[in-house]
Amino acid sequence: MASDAETFIRGLGSPKVDLLGFSLGGMLTQVLAVQHPGLIRRLIIAGAAPRGGEEHLLAVVDEAFARGATDVRLPLFFTPSEESQRAGRAFVARATMRKENRDPDSGEDVSNAQAKAIIGWCARKHEGEATLRAISQPTLIVHGSDDTMFPSINTYNMFKAMRNAQLVLYPDSGHGALFQYPARFVAHCRTFLDE
Image 1 (spheres, one colour):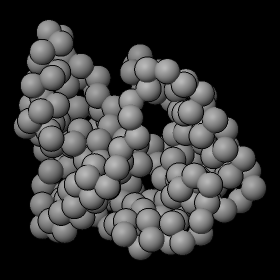
Image 2 (cartoon, rainbow, N blue to C red):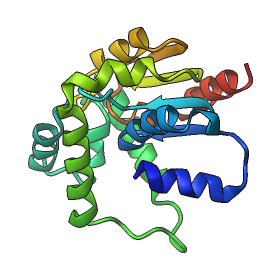
Image 3 (cartoon, rainbow, N blue to C red):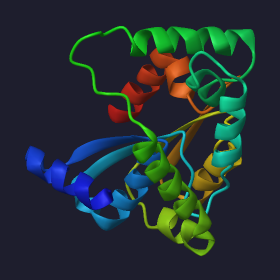
Image 4 (tube, one colour):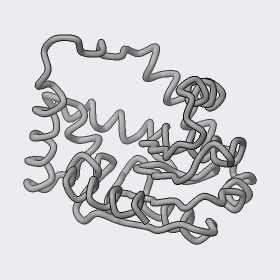
């Protein structure tokens, strides 16, 4: 996946890019930053874990489906609090607003491959800090305070291991913290990218 992303970025013709990765994408940004440091100016890693990090993906996904939510993203990405769930419903409304020219919903082929990649990434315990220490680009790490998929301790460990990282934890938020606080997230990103 990182190789495909690198090919795509080079195809854009930009000498350097700022790269935002969410969840599995945040894991790919770490790989790209190490393998192609000259390609990336700044990184934003949201809702991700370091290589070898703690994850509870399958248990959390099983629990979310067991709740029978109208949209599985509500229990997966947001905390049970009414405020977080309200923000989750607003996110789902924004995400489904466009009716034409939408990407098709992904099925089990995609979700199973994603789960396998995430579990494999987190299973590589001995490589985590070495990968993080090799990242030299300025990095903004954004995470939910109560992310059940990738516990927030992961982000603190990332922050401590990286040479040039900033860490932001959003309150009462889960895996979808950037969707719960979209205006705040954009403001943090703009400030970071404009430094």
